[in-house]
Image 1 (cartoon, rainbow, N blue to C red):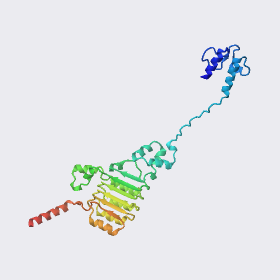
Image 2 (image 1 turned 90 degrees about the horizontal axis):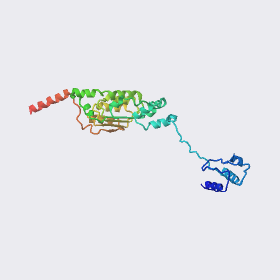
Image 3 (image 1 turned 90 degrees about the vertical axis):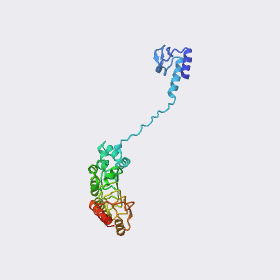
Image 4 (image 1 turned 120 degrees about the vertical axis):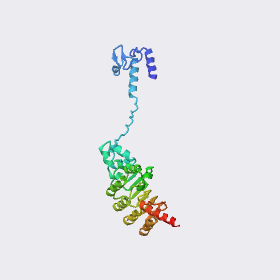
Length: 302
């Protein structure tokens, strides 16, 4: 603003080199000689031109502020991360998110199939065992299948008491957990912990097969598994060489004799059976019929 006032002051003093049109851009043309300001640098022909040339040279000698460019933000594609970082990134995702993320490119698919990613698996229903969003491998250490649903009550009914409709409900998932445990026996020899809850169709043989194949199994937790009997406890005592804890909670076919046999054979194993012995075990129809006839005879005699 001060430069414009100074130029107007020179114009009023009669400088012929100033533009007659206000706001004309530099370089100013001298109408007397029709030469631009660059010509005046070497030899200005009057006082007004000298002042303009001096102001122009002073402006050129004035130090300018250096232009500082803001650095561009650093960007990196996820595939540029190394294998360890990608495994750590996948570890924060659930099974479905891992599978969806792995379908984006081949490199992420290889990370998804890496057995090191799958050291822990948890399933909230047997139907999840049908999905292809997990990988079984030697890195699996902790496995849990917990089913808390109203259908568990149907599965817990004795087979000889189920209606045709109830049998149809159980038929859709009866062998899912058993076949899955068979794959675990073959693929996961380093399993350390197995937890089954609400799996009404798991038998003693299924658990014993896992104990035989996974010699490093330390913790076995069975809850509300109605087909588990004292035979499972005998198998745990015979084949569970690394077992440290065994829990059989709400398994109605577990007896006090079976628990006592495990305590005598494996005293180092921490054994718990919450509400298992107090529950009424299953009785086959012929046994119930014989008891009913014996009771009728006693009543008749009395």
